[in-house]
Image 1 (cartoon, rainbow, N blue to C red):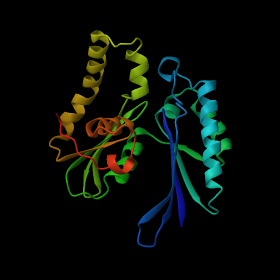
Image 2 (image 1 turned 120 degrees about the horizontal axis):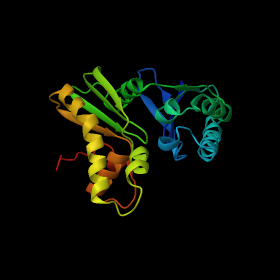
Image 3 (image 1 turned 180 degrees about the horizontal axis):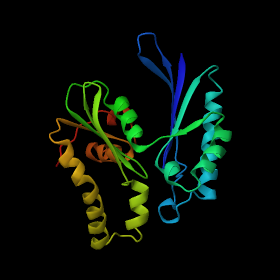
Image 4 (image 1 turned 45 degrees about the vertical axis):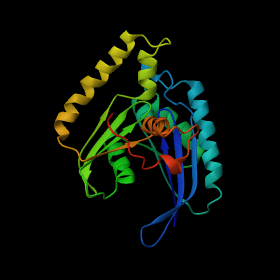
Length: 233
């Protein structure tokens, strides 16, 4: 069976098409991404702009073209922070569904955290915290052996914080301090709630960039980045 998963986020749009085998394993056939930056300006205006919508529509048309190479493919498309927060989120969803040719489900933050944990952590035996830093939100999920015990979503995102605090470059010490305090207020209660953690798994662009810096990579290479371990220091 050939299936496709699509994630329409605040910054990126991602699609993986895979062949699922009878034993539950799978082989990736296509891994496609785009950066429509759907949530550009959303934090200030409360709406997804026409320009951002156009970029996202173009990304969905591109995805649709890839899907056309796989007859009878089963597609599950989800949208996250930008579309669930925008005042015009339902209108945007309708437009993107027309471009993609498949239904799009706007999911809540807890469900986003759950799905990401299952994909990134799976059934690892350690007591694991998954952190998914997106453009508009950051999701956290804690679990062990494939069972999730807690999940949460916060309004911490790379696009959101850049537009809110990085209004001029270079960043002033005041802006950095304000951003840190904003983040601290949201994550300290979660850290207290989760208790002792054996392993942290980081997902998405920010931990990927940190891994590239740590390894001194000039360009992104998923084979070298995936699974890379960093110390807190």
